Structure formats: structure tokens, C-alpha cells
Image (cartoon, chains in turn brown, red):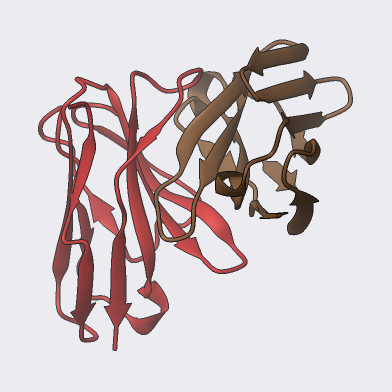
Length: 112
Length: 113
């Protein structure tokens, strides 16, 4: 099975950097995904890691360590519009390639 | 425009009255999935489909049915809805299962009284 843990809430200041952590226990997975979800809206894809290391996409970066069961999403130069929930998710492997497990999400509040 | 559409967006119904929530994607994706989202419980997978005529259970399939007769459509059927199925439902699709990101529909807010 798969279990994903994320902090429930975080607060940060506009212009700052914030790191949202995700730890997981899984028997194997295809990739680790990060999604952003604004209140009342659908999740949208942010970033994806399949190998260990850092993936950078503009103001957003995501890191994965498979040996430690750990990932983080790094948001730089925070803007008010970054206030949202951030979901960590894994997709299954082989016969479980259709399975998708999400963490409960981290609600980020950006303050002026 | 590439998108996943769901209908209806909002639905209030009564216990036991069969309903169907439609989901359609125009991206020629092989994989489609249904999730429900409840406060404090995150997104939980109900059913998924790896391709036409191939469906399988997710983590919370009880009380739901699905079918995948065409590549673009993946309806969610509640044969006898109950109040504990009151939730926000999302349909999603991806090119394939496994390593591809999912694209989500706008959501269907269902209330069962």
C-alpha cells in the first residue's frame, strides 16, 4: 500500500521562499507528482520526479529522494496567487500503474 | 482547447435515486480516473480505466460503478446514492497510466439528502 504525509498548513510572506515536504511509504511507484489546487477549483499539475534529484520549473522546484521516502516542493519569490493547497501524489508501478494516491494536501497562505 | 469536462457541476438528489455523472476528454488519453474529495481526507481514487473496456477499482469503489465504452467518455454511476456519498467528485485523464500527469475536470459537487 501507499501512505503519504504532508503538513496540513503553512504560512509564508510574499516574496519569500517556502518548502513543502512530503514523506511517503510505498512498495514502489512510477513517479512523484505535485499539484496545485486553488479553493473550489480542480488540481493542476506542477511538477514531476521519477529519479532522485531536483527538477526546476521557473519559480517552482521539486526534489525526490527515493532512498529516504521524501520529496519537497520549493516555491520561490512567493506571490499572493500562490495561496492554495499543494498535493503530493504517487502513481503505481507495473500492475498498479493505474493506481494513484494523493496526500491530504498542504494549505499554503501567503501574507503581504 | 484540450480539456476534461464533467456534468453536472452541481447536483442535489435524494437517497436511492440513481444518478450518472458524465466525464469526457478530448485529448485522446488512454487513462481516466474518478476521485472524490472530502475535507480532511484529500483525493481518494474511486475507479480508474487504463483503456477502453478496461476498468479497475481504486481505494473507495463501494457504491459506485463505471464503464468505458469509448475512449473519450468515462461516466460514474451511483445506483443507489446515500448521504455518505455527498462529496466533491473529480474526473481526470492522462496519456497513459504510470508516469504521466493527470488533467482534472472542474469537479461535480454532489449532495445526497
